[in-house]
Length: 286
Length: 136
Image (cartoon, rainbow over all chains, first blue to last red; front, side):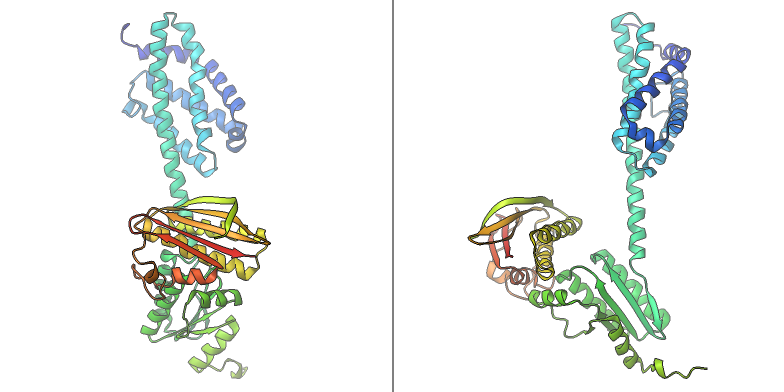
């Protein structure tokens, strides 16, 4: 083995050829991934590449551990880059391409400087390994950001999906939409019961016309919600059971005969008026 | 048993999300094959029950969708298979109201009523394979 690798010297070599390396790098990025250029914007990309290269060369003079303090600035810019890109729906492939194409761009500079094949090999190997690690760090943070975006969206959807409408004095309506899985049903039940308590409502109309399938799990959840409502002294009416759903439910063996059901919201509302003794159409107009 | 002819779709089922995906795929296929809205709902509900059974009882399994043909008639065949614990007493599992896990106990028998053919092959420790067929 030759002498210890002098990273400070490599850093200087790269610094002296920084513009050329950057140019090569950007040419490669533009050539390899049109999509990345389109999504991130060419100017942005150039700026990010330039900043990253600058910090990398700087870090190289001060240390070799990419997880260490010398590389802190490099990591910071990589993390902000991956955050930025995760929002723009840029693919992991593009991220990897972006980082790894830098390897090719400093190759010729190093080849020009180090003539001894063994030494050159060793240096390229060492620097490339740093780049690999940096690539992994970026990809990791990119994935984490993606996951958190998906979780945020899921939460947003969950909250969206349980609107409680106060349609009349002491009458609530909950239009259920989409897929009623266990966690959503839990949310529906909690939201409904809280709303009943807060508004002192006597009737809750659960409209399921937006639910594509009522299988035994959904039915079980509905029945539980009805039972819980009953415990609070209120009545739960289920509306919006379409004909194909009702036929399917019967064949499936689901028994909702203990529950007040109506085909339409309007009919459900009439029942609610009867139950609460409200006569909405006889209120004198003032 | 009806001879499934052409495989239209396959997917692993390991989670509730997979069950939802399976439902959506089967609905699209049933629609394409020309099933009525009512029959689509029946088949998809059966898929929901049987898919969830895989998740609850076996943890993981597979769904394979075929175009079914028998003489003049054609339809859809769906095979649910898993390597789970299997069913000790198939007759009991097919009884309304029986459940080993605290559900309504209607899923298996209910699903069988929603389709035209329902074949179940299960032995304790040897997994379960259920084939459902609905004719157009």
